[in-house]
Amino acid sequence: MNRYSVNLSTVFTEVPFLERFKKAREAGFVYVECQFPYTYTIEEIKKELKQNQLSMDLINLPPGQWEKGDRGLAADPERIEEFKRSVEKGIRYANGLGVKMIHCMAGIHPDNNLEVFIENLLFAGTAMSKHEITLLIEPINPFDMPGYFLNDIQQAADIIRRVALPNVRLQFDFYHIEKIHGHSLSMYQKYAELVSHVQIADHPGRQEPGTGEMNYTDILQYLSKHYRGLIGLEYNPQGRSEESFAWLKGVIS
Image (cartoon, rainbow, N blue to C red):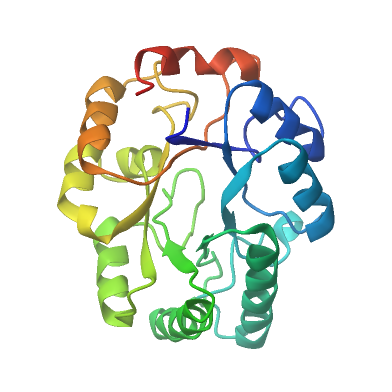
């Protein structure tokens, strides 16, 4: 399973977060990712990574107050200083955990602004470049996250090209792109030059491959030939998490 990174925010949720690292190792993974590690100290997470011989590939920047509806800060003109503090915290966690990619969420505030988003990405990308960290942005579908500022792949590509920093790149989630645009594999092929991380889940239920309508046989075969990074398993298992990896048996290289 050395091409796959299991997302501990969505998989193994049957047990508390810090127990999911052991579950990942027992299932055969060597890479994990998560959305927001900030409830726990760097030392707590680092201990679990070391004990279970795991590497963490990806985290998100702090999104603001998630429980109060925040879904990122980067495009909000009223919270620029808070965003900058979130970048500092994200870098600190990334450095402490050996993470080299951070996803930056744009937010859902009605006053979100493109120019603010670009300036904040310039700030964050520049700061992260000093630590050899890649900053990722990701289109998220408006059905699951109404009002999310970044909800179109061409919009994301235009922003990346305007920011014009080599470490500001695209996170391509096949589920979100399928939900937004359809034809997700064709979309991947069109924008592959901008992609530094891939995530997968089936459509429409956002569960493991094989539970929905997407042709993951073709998608994974293509990725095996043309994509060298890790594939993040950011899905909600249909049943027990341990049983949600059956589809991997036919694709592990």
